[in-house]
Image (cartoon, rainbow, N blue to C red; front, side):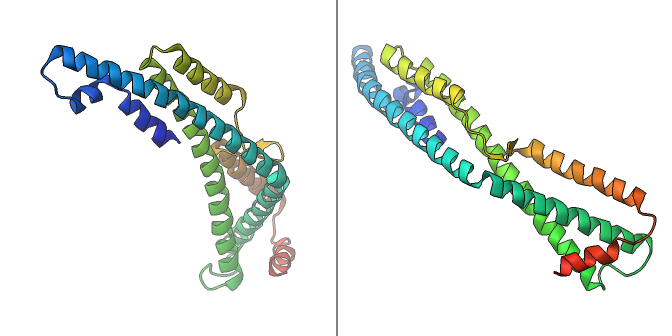
Length: 218
């Protein structure tokens, strides 16, 4: 959608029109500009109406999907949190007590694989949502630039209604109330680090390694 709006903005730029119509006569050039502006005005107005309708439909569909899967995503994040914490805990004591080597012990390799998979999924999910929010900001900026190109009140009204729709109906993907973005990724891994430090401090021995290993195997 942003790519299309950007192309429409470029077509609405007077400099692009002068490049397309290299006419020496000043009167003929002004006539071409007036006719081109008249045609683009109606096209741009209908284009904005269509984009605003498409954005509203995408907004409704995304909210329904988010409402249906919000707690499933939260449960998925909780599972990733548990796997990463338990995996790092077991790997730490394996090195600290020199029980086994990471590359020769199958359990440690299994924990390492789960840590990489869970971390990648969490980062990818939050980063994808964060990129979507950034695209919405770009849409608002393109609309402001497009509004400058036209003096017609109908187009300005369409742009303002579209901008107001973006402002009043923001789409935020959530997981049980937590907004999915890069800040959540930082909070996620910082909380893991905090829990890991607490577990290590309260465990002077590897008493929890055996139970956690049994859980991972199941």
